[in-house]
Length: 210
Image (tube, rainbow, N blue to C red):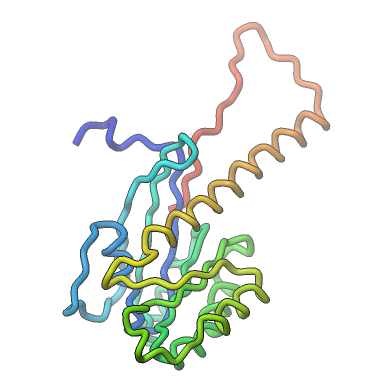
């Protein structure tokens, strides 16, 4: 792989959270590698994959982290959330208990992640529609009330997997660009800068969250 393949304008860390068994690992695998495994086992510890996408003419590298949803792995919490700019909070539409746990995972975010992290509520396993126990409208209304994005997906048949990640990456991209612009405007209003003859304007081309 050439160094050209490694070039990107922005690097965004996205975390997947939710109860064990809701399909987080397969969501990541489907997006990053277009793979799905019916025999995928519970994640132990932390895994992450990367994928590069184009957003409005810029190259964005997504670093997506997946961890176990079991309480006994809480020791990794702080490092897991550090630097994350987006979070997919995943539940299984056929397991109401996983939806009830969403509030617990949101508390984790509030305790350990940046307060401006972009949150998307994800109802996974829509292929199990005949077993649905969480109505779409109920989850959507909950997301709207809390000002989260919302989408339903199926890692099994790829439904909305690409859309979920592109939507969250695009929103993060817009927020970062807006913040950069706001910072520059603030400088322009507060300070008169006279560049020297050999000075060059500083260019912010990479947002790196590790």
